[in-house]
Image 1 (cartoon, helix red, strand yellow):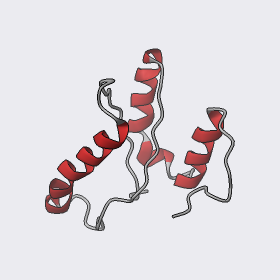
Image 2 (cartoon, rainbow, N blue to C red; image 1 turned 45 degrees about the vertical axis):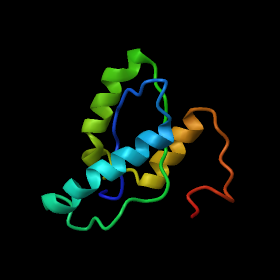
Image 3 (cartoon, rainbow, N blue to C red; image 1 turned 90 degrees about the horizontal axis):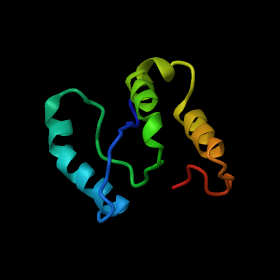
Image 4 (cartoon, one colour; image 1 turned 30 degrees about the vertical axis):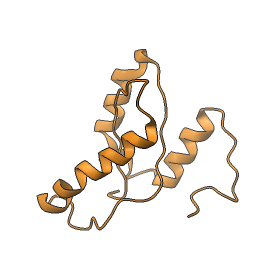
Length: 100
């Protein structure tokens, strides 16, 4: 599913998540558009999701990210996002879930 990415990063506590995502999108944009690897890319979405993990979960998360192409053959983005949110004990408000 080529409509989203998964990345694993460590961000220093002095950097806000919003600032990091803004800088990531701004910095990556020229390469994404010129590389030819993402011909359907037109722009970044306005929203993003972020989750924290325990250090001990790092290796399994890296494997999870590596297997996204295979994984998304059986689970849509919406199904995955819903599972991650609910799996972290967060109640989803359907009025706002994945709405612009």
